[in-house]
Image 1 (cartoon, helix red, strand yellow):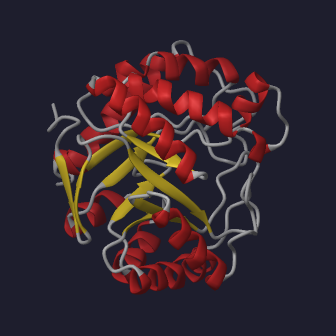
Image 2 (image 1 turned 180 degrees about the vertical axis):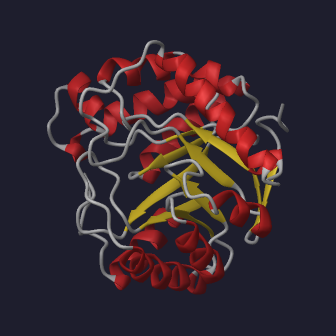
Length: 284
């Protein structure tokens, strides 16, 4: 169906070869209420400093988000989201001109403004639910991450149900990819994310990770975003989000072994070292 996991994705910041090994996407939440680091990088100077740190540690993408998607989170206005993300993206690109920045948004208007500010990837947690998002992605010629989420952040963890979570997530992502292609988005600009933790129980998340190859079989690069999430705390017995590093590392290495290519993380250096070691072992 697609160009395959080794295809190159062209961005205004240059080329990312998603087939050359694990790609680290550093999380930059410019929000006061994100689940694990809310408020830490809310100021402009703090945000840029954190981006610089993650780049030094090996991140190849900085993902900037201005609205929390934690379970139970309230949405923010489009104006507030713009005010949070645009100045940060401008400053990051000014400080690091070659940096690949993604914008974590489901609003086409925010995506447009972020691309104008220097972003070159759209990370869409609602997978084209905004009718204009596919059009914007096609017109700008940028990669888009299509994420599966059951419901919306405010209510997504209230008794999520599936008959077959792997099949349903796969079919949803395949359908959204086709929607993007029909709108004119090139196949090589599509990245899929099964949405670990977005409207899923512990059992759903573990099953998706175990059978991630089913998602990979669609032929698009797969992004995994499980860093510090609560289901890892249930497995490892930790209520503190920042204490879930080892569980994050183990899960990301297993996802890599099952075909994931891009890893959205808070702690860049340890994840880079773990994944590069796994890649070296695979190369023999």
